[in-house]
Image 1: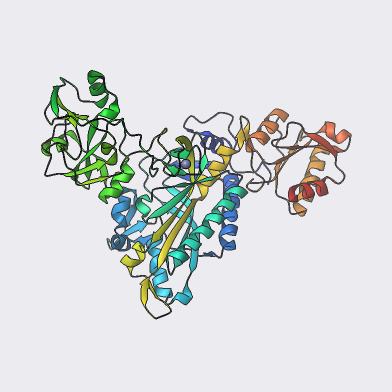
Image 2: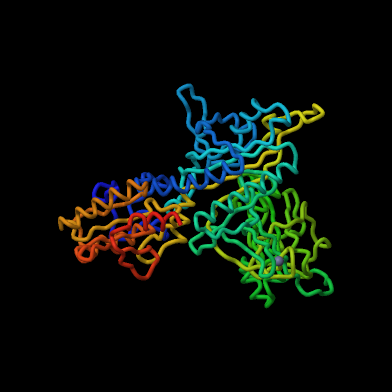
Amino acid sequence: MRLSQLFGKTMRQTPSEAENVSHRLLLRTGMIYQVAAGAYSYLPLGWRALKKVENIVREEMDAIGGQELHMSVLQPLELWQETERDQAFGQSLFTVSDRRDRKLVLGPTHEEVAAEMVKRNVQSYRDLPLLLYQIQTKFRDEPRPRGGLMRVREFIMKDMYSFDTDEEALDASYTRIAGAYRRIYERCGLPAIVVDADSGAIGGKESQEFILPADSGEDQILYCSDCDYAANVEKAEGMKRPNEAEEKLPTEEVDTPGIVTINDLAQLLDIPRSKTLKAVFYSADGEVVFVVIRGDIEVNEAKLRNTLKCHELRLATEDEVKQAGLVAGSASPIGISGIKRIADNSIMLGANFVAGANRPDTHVKNVNYPRDFAVDEITDIASAAVGDGCPRCKGELLSVRGIELGHIFKLGTFISERLGATYLDQDGVEGPILMGSYGIGIGRLLAAVIEECHDDKGIIWPAAIAPYPIHLCSISADDADVAQTAERLYSRLQEEGLEVLYDDRSESPGVKLNDADLLGMPLRLVLSPRTLKSRSIEMKGRSDEEAVVVPLKGVVERIRDLLSG
Ligand SMILES: [Zn+2]
């Protein structure tokens, strides 16, 4: 490809809207173009890189027996209602109405469509297991698209679905696909780690994420200092530190004028926050829920949502709290009724807590569960935090930020049961098919490669993903000898089947070399009047410190060997 003709120009300036390195470099290299919030076009260079990522993913999916197909983006809303995932996805679901006013979903994922198809095509255990996948555009109405290709509303995803007869077979499929995911990230040059994750709107019991540790990442991962335990903070189970043991004392009211926060309360009474109980009100699908947790610990909304089995969860408004007959800031678990009460098990890890009195300017000392109040459910709804104990060993939890590169789910039977996707076993007994779901965002993977592989001059493409492995520059392109030699070399390399980006522009050497660094192809070749004098050419790997000058004679073979080795 001639750079003089390439659609998409490089930019000298950093675009002001860029939020992270990959966003900045994708815009500066002219690889993507923003069409709307969270919607991008890929320009030719970006599209080539994307296709290379896509092919790595395809090869690994095929290698484990995946069958590629292509499902319709348009999906009947009824299918989503049957599994109730229309509610789980809520406003993230893009819907359209057709001319007959029939509601359709622009697919954010394809479990329902895939299960329906399998239901029609699978009769017996002999038809299983099945691994079906596609690489296709998906739609999710993200509330806050951001970070270039990191969080978008229209995106290209590889989604695979597994169909098995029993738990053991599902485990085998899941393990096989996880292995393929590891190979994909390895081939893309990404040191991904596997962490336990919350299943969120997709559903199912068990799921894991593949995370690239990166400061720019949106996800917070907690991991153990001593063993291999690692989990997304939404899912992580930290061992809470118990308060010191003490004798239970009788309750006692205490004046706390103007005190509404835990911090102020702890300060006023000169006690650690861990000696207080915090009341938090949520609205779960419109119903006000009372949550009580130790004052030093935060509520984890993913865990609370799973506990309540609700779809929409948010903090209750002041009005909603008042209507429930409670006093925000001084709300108390004592004597509360007529409202769902959920407690975090941290309220058991200590004694003689200070809690609200459900009256302004008053709190109660020496509150003990279950002596002084009751709840409907006591479980783990706490956000694990740095410093908590590891749930598996005696280690301590540490934290790292990361980019989610992939998410795999054991769905089990919840989709197939609702849609009636069954099979007949060896004895002719009908049972639900067990499903798994496995996703990789292709565009985000491309962006993650740039986050991982760059320097202050530009991208450093891994050879496997570079839009072109070779960047050929002619310095003094107006010099007839240089131009002719460069043209000849360009043709010879292409005849060898090598992909070359050829900078044939009559720009200054500075501009051309800067662009070569910015665009980041693995191997740069520079032909100039100076190198031509000795019938040679300059060769430099993108991450090499120094260029080497090699004879023009035999250079094509040399490059071919270099790139294939
Ligand atoms: Zn551990």
